[in-house]
Amino acid sequence: MFIAPRFHTNQAHAVRALLRSGTEVAFLVRRIRSKEYHHDLEPEVLGEGLISSSVRGIADVKTHNKLFSYPSAPRLIRRARRFKPDIAVIREQGGYSSLAMLIMKALGFRCVLHTQRPICNPPDDEGRTPLTKLLQRISSPMVRYELTPLLGLEELARVEDHGLAPAVQHLSADAEAQEGINPYKVMLKGERSRHPGRAVFHVPFVVEQPWTKEVWTEDGPTRILTVAEFRERKRIMELLETLALLKSRGKDVHLTLVSNSGSERKQRYQERVMARIEEPDLTGAVDVRTDLDHEEMLKEYRHHDIFILPSDGEPAAYSPLEAMAAGLPVICSKGNGTYEYVLHAGGGMVFQERDFEGMRFCLESLVDDTRLRREMGLRGMEFALSSMDPDGIPGRLEAIHRMIATDQ
Image (tube, rainbow, N blue to C red; front, side, top):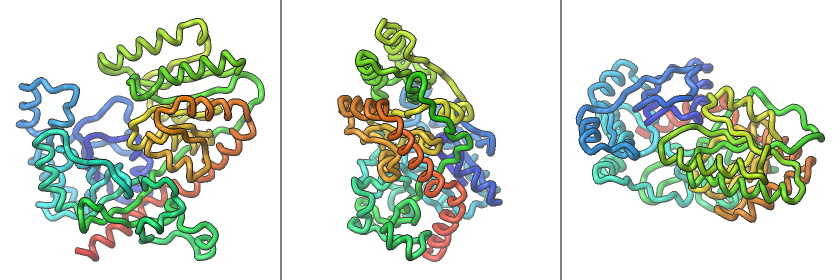
């Protein structure tokens, strides 16, 4: 059983693999958002409790409603008792998930916290409201097991130096001797320094990409793709300025921006973006596509030559991994947690967070070198096939379940 604020796209491939393996899966969410991918499993809306929704209504809390939202205890108890999960995977440790953890533990179910905090040097994870902080302090000692898709290492080959022990081997002895410990082919186990006794398992993201890039054309513009909401930290304006600079240098480039409509604040930023696109130096150089569903987005990758994510403050962006799986070279900043996948795969180029000159260098390098684009794209796709295969997820979760059952 999964319990989460919402059904995130980065879990869709894992759920599909679990169902394909014959595993029974239930996915409980606070709410359903538009454009989520529910083709394999329809999430069940757990919603929130009466007191929680009433308080938010009185306080008129809208922009940060997830910080003031807590699940309906009676609904969760009834559903858990009917389903009787062998293991409950609870997403993040905000107020909603912390209360869900307390309830599931009280019912006697084995629980694992699923976060996007790196094993090494995780950021501060304290809640942003007094009630959330209180729930976290109560529930944290109960959290003995945690899953994360991020290592947080600058040099992934040196995992042994950080006290991470391989718990489940997937490589032969010969392959290990040649490659050292590959953190994407073994399951690593560490500990949270702030939470003594909590075991943390590295379970990489998985991705299934049926529409891979097949043709690299020499003619026409270099087609660049980005996926970003209309928000300041997504750095769309900075990317547009970089595109304009490349065009001024005689580069034949075209950008597709995939985004979605949203709040009034996002609309204001969208207006700025659209106004910049209409200026003479970018005329005809940018297409904007909004509100694509997940399947439409997957098909979009194969029509482009480079994927770029200029944003900062990204805990773990999933689109670069889908782009690699499709065979595109990826450019992103170290402000995106999944940059470590790009580096380890050799599937693209990484620049320092908010280093827009570095971003320009990476983009221009790939625009100028078709061979480099192909080589990086192929390496990223091979990495995705070998190290992010969704069919490995059932075995990993079964292994974790065995460890928890033995430990308890």
